[in-house]
Length: 418
Ligand code: DOR
Ligand code: ZN
Image 1: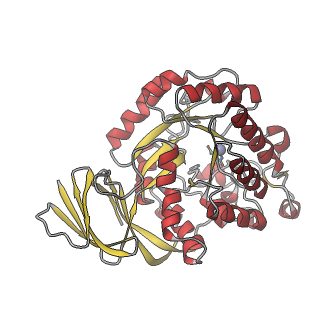
Image 2: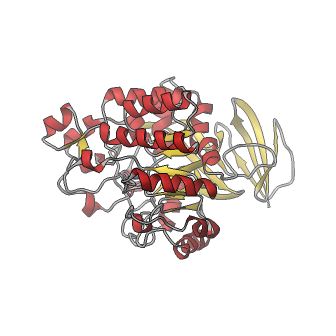
Image 3: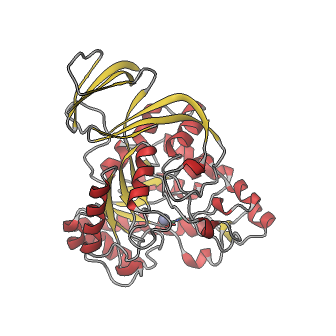
């Protein structure tokens, strides 16, 4: 099968791109060749398809929130060819049967590539380590207890030691539950105004510090999930300067949103860690620009209407993120002139692929044809009703954004067309 993408823009230059089967065969100013399909990409920018290293697909167990099929549709509609799914399913991804099930189901759905992340501890309970070797054999690409922090330093130490032996990235959800207490939003002026219990920045930073200290002691890698505070950015910046092997991600909602969004009491702004203050948001952007923050991941966390259209305190944590990630980040970072498109593309594709050891994330001859075509000039309003995801929970509904995903190819096959 041959597909020719004509007249696209790549790194600012006009280019034709030839796909043969699952690979990029040629990248040239002009290609004339007999092909099965031609796509006129005039005015469209060619990017490596995005890689989400932090997605919640919910299947098995919470199919009322999302399933592998709807989550995969959301992924390709968002420009993602690869998603790594977190283990807080029911049952938890802590045994090889669930890993095999997810891989098998994703192949049946045949849209995005789905890479399961195994649990660090059995049942995400923090008590007994999962069998990482067996999970790796079954196909996991990393381990995490995301959603539940690993509460003791001793368990995290063990996990880091074992994961190093199995060459598995450890993705840490940093949250000291004793400091969270019964908080539901960021602790600050807005939590007081809203009369909602606050979660201090320290709840994240205490555990970020712990992971940095452990990674240094063991001379091993650790990856910090969803960084949300100014303090975490400076801890990680300092650790990197000292040679600690720490990497981290932030999410579109910490780049674009602050806790001003809670003042409407719409629980679609409820997420864990919570949306923080403007100074945190600015520090996150600085961290992305200076290389402290390695990756933009979605933390796509779909929930049902029933779990969100209730009192703020009782609502579930999470934002449905796959289908708005690129446009939100492009609008906030690139349109406003703070970041180059190349850097944004790197943060959303190549950087996460490298951390997760997934062979994709770049446009190059001979590479896998995971490609997204975007119209960078198109402006539109985010409309969650149109999401393929079952999760319509986003605080960015109705926001005017720029940058529309038009086509997504996964290993040479067209999986999404707007
Ligand atoms: O807001 C969140 N939602 N944060 C997490 O860590 C977990 C996630 C979920 O699974 O809903
Ligand atoms: Zn998390």
